[in-house]
Amino acid sequence: MPQKYKLKLVIIGEHAAGKTSLIKTFVENKFSSDYRPTIGTNIFIRRLDLAGDEVTLTVWDIAGQERWTSMRPLYYKGSSGAFIVGDLTRRSSFEAITKFWAPDLKKYAGDLPIIVLANKCDLQHEATKEDIDDCAKSIGAIAAIETSAKNGDNVTEAFMRITKAVLKKQ
Ligand code: G3D
Ligand code: MG
Image 1 (cartoon, rainbow, N blue to C red):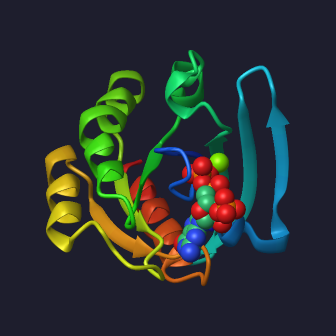
Image 2 (spheres, rainbow, N blue to C red):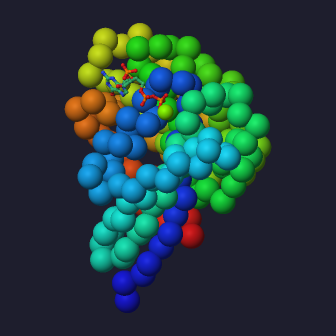
């Protein structure tokens, strides 16, 4: 029997790492976006067909002021998977994942599948493969994937991978 699932994903990481761009690349024309000023987020929706099952993904995107919003606990609530985005042109954005974003996520959302996205792979890298692997390993991410929101490299693959990991856990 085909199943229907509704999953909430969150996408976090330093300002300008490419979170909003990644979601927009993934949802293409099929998105509906719902801005919730009270919690400072955009919510994007896309349906996926996964081996006959219908999956409705709602992807929550922090809008600006990433680190400073007191709404982060609300933002994380009920999420079943997370992307943490680093910017390949800024090594410090991966340090911020290890030091700030992953602990913050775990504090409020508990144990859930996490994928590190090393975004902007179309540009000159400052972060090395070792930086990225160390980061992913230290936070217990299930994978680290290089993406480009600009040319679409690996974006759909990353969303498929997190969705499958979440469904496997259910
Ligand atoms: P954020 O939501 O994490 O804050 P944004 O980041 O999605 O707003 O992206 C920040 C800037 O990086 C944007 O540039 C965006 O176009 C650019 N960007 C995002 N992803 C990529 C990528 O994969 N490759 C390249 N080359 N650029 C990317 P602007 O100039 O609009 O601020
Ligand atoms: Mg954004």
